[in-house]
Image (cartoon, rainbow, N blue to C red; front, side, top):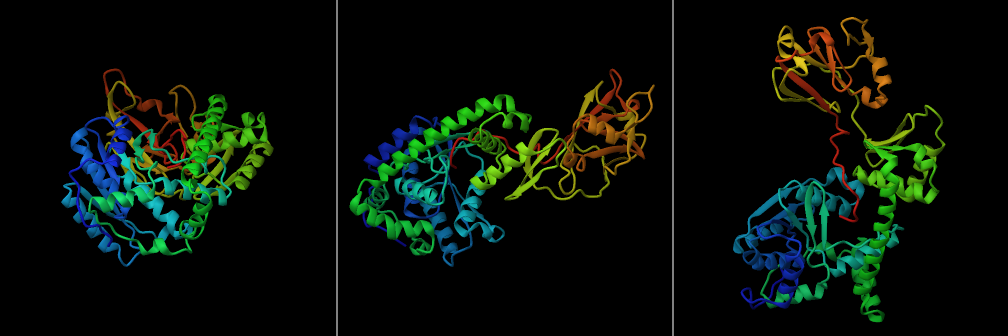
Length: 463
């Protein structure tokens, strides 16, 4: 454990004022901030800074330590973080994660994904991360060496708003690692040293220990220079997103992408729109080769072609001239679930959630439903339903085709029965004889499948 000798915790410092100036413009008084605390010098310094600043701005600061279970020292690091937060009167939370299912991603990538997921599970207005200027330079070089495009090479942002999620804060992003270490020594802070940071078999550590020291001898200002380059990439990525948003205004509707619109664009512009479409759905962005192949297959697909391209747990599908991106789903299951008045029922496998809402004069008649056992079942392919008392029954299969429901979604649709009679397929068809009359107590039944429950956001750079 590293430490320094003297303490100046009660004295304002230039770094403290820089962080105050940075955060006060974007973080309102009284906001809650959740800090990702590893126990390393960077996150310890940020914790100390936020603890000093929180009374001035009435911020509610808490910390989360993610226990990956990789190092033999992991328990000690967690204990250190808990004790440090206790000394600073900062609420502390510990979350243990299992990295083994994601090991094929690589230890660093898997640990990063699990940390972000853990932070996202906790309520806060802002998530504070302790990335600094050295991290920015290392990340840019790693991305370039991996052949990243302008988005991958874009700068991390000091402030990154995110729809339907806490905004990200990186208040140390314009601070060198050496400044943080100097601050820690000056204020008598202790921190932990992760021995894996010395292992140069990891690409980031190889750059940090073997490449960047040599680079610094010839280009001492490389940190700020690379940060400036990353900012230029970020500006270019923003322009590409703005162009894609213009194309998307007519090409993307209700989470699907018009293949005809793709065909009208140049190859580069088509790839840009396809990349944007995937980002909007929070899908992983494939490499350039895979993205080009996706675009080729979509644009060359004939009428009625059934395209299915899978990557990183996702799939790209095509139906009636529209492209869909969705997670790879579990196969349809066989089930029969009795409804006993619950507000919602979570169905097996990938069949989603069925919701029930009490209403008056709308939906299904509650008194009619009470005449039999109400169950939710999967489709079996030969169902029919009577939509109009004066007309013959109609095939559910034909109704699904008429309404343009994609084949993979048809397999997951639940059906609601009263006894052995098909009463309703949510969003598709309802039996006329079960309609609630004016003034009668009714129930509205809706379905959320897992693809519709995806979070949708506007792509805005690196997380």
